[in-house]
Image (cartoon, rainbow, N blue to C red):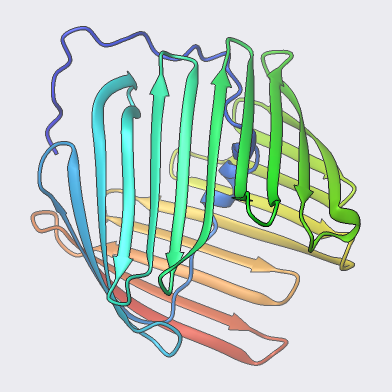
Length: 302
């Protein structure tokens, strides 16, 4: 899609900012495949340089139906990959709808609003305000706030860059309501991230458990990651290893993962033509312990 030229774009966010607290483990998670089952057709159409719609038709035992999605990206450019405001939304034939709104005020303040409607009822809603300074990011989130029943969740996060490669942070989750034992509960956690030239390691630890991730970029087109998650409340832990291989000349992207629950998952994407916007996606998942699996095939147009 063509870009709209900017007469006087604002300066970009300083690179010394550590980013959002929620993105500490994002590099490793982004390379893991998202497996699907059945048949899927996705048609994406750019109506302008800022507006795009999509049509998704799914046929599977768990999810059969049609979904319409729309994305709008505004004119306010903060960087090569950052433009605001952003509107994201999708809905299906039953009226189940999800929506996200992101915007920035100045160069430091950002707002994110999310909502979900299921079966004509508000299933979830949350709002986040974030301040990105030169060396730190502070975020405050209010989720599922119910003034009538006096319940909700408040999350405060702080991530600060201490050296060129080391980031440290903390998170405080406060939940209140009648369904919470004692009426309220507070759960703190702490995080650390080390970023080298070709790899990144991150850790989050607290009363609820431990979360570790490692991402390594071997070459420009090959990267892999390892993630460990444990939940002390239910006494469960899982480790996942995944990799991503790209072959731009062939229009091929492969993602695969295996975890300690003996689940193997892979997604293969192949661009069918350099002239036409057709991409074939093949997905497969197999759990050796449960002798269960699923297979999916999809076509992406656009």
